[in-house]
Image (cartoon, rainbow, N blue to C red):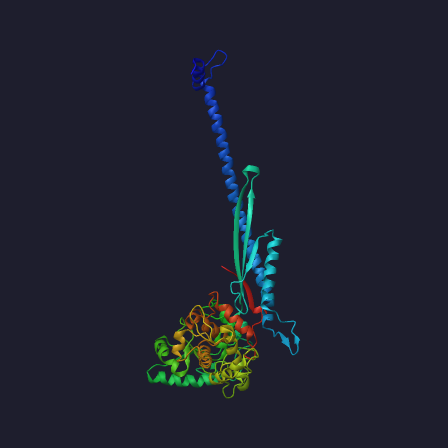
Length: 475
């Protein structure tokens, strides 16, 4: 290597000041470094501001999306509510199509269209609609999902955020009074014991109960019997707590079957002995409240409580479907397959439960499929759990045995709970869950189950009216 080349290489490696180059002042270097730090700091602040803006915009966007999802779900529910009962209209009237009938696919499309219209109106274009219970014969639930991409900033500083929200709505039962009562309840003759009114057959049963208590050294006292809706309204105004005072129009006292008994020292004796005289403790938290569970629906006002029972001597046959001999058990609805109609008639007659009620249950439970099996293990046409089937001594896969046991169980539940909606709820959710609250459990399944069956029923009372179905968001 030549000396010139070596020197050039050395100069390239080491900076050598020359006369033509000025010496750089240390303060200038410090200022340059400070300028770089300031620029980097400003850039960091800008990035932080952009991140905060993205987060803030995302939070606001998610709130907007949630509101739209809620609105869309409710809109879909209302569209379904308005058309729900068209699902149960017959497809044909004699030899021509029924314009009132609506196929399930068309019904769901109405809900979907309503939800998407709300989403579009609120500039949420990426929306999807589904129906969690779509496999049901009459779906009552709708789910709306909203997804949007938000952009914040400009050019290279632009950031995006993906947001989402969802909401579910369902149709459910509204005012229980409209489902379980009408007029002033019982409107037949009254008998009096200790100055308290009640149905004549209840008075005779109380006489036997009181005699048995007296033999054991207990003197029963009646603190309340039949109460009209007006009397119930007064009690409600004085103490508006639904756990202790039923809302006007919903109290079983209006049926003339209920007695509030004392003294407190008799509660244990009553719990142990009242069932022998066909009195059952209605609610776990009311050890004084006993209802007569024979002839549960007799004498109820026209259009009133739907329950099983026969009319006692002297009482008018004005109850719901089961209060008149022929109307009590038929006719079997037209949607029942021919091979099951005789079984329903026999079971309804034997257990004094409406054939229409039993038929609607079978339709909802299995679609009359004797081979049906649920994911929970329920078996057969009436969807009995193995333990329940064993308690009734039946083979749940045998339609004849299952239908008879279904009628038997419904008779028992009607006697225990005093109304068709509550008995249906107990068939689905268990009597313990219903007795615990004196209501239809809000468990996501049972309200829809009850509403579907009531909508199918005819001949056992008026089907639930559209105004008694409400739309609510599921939290």
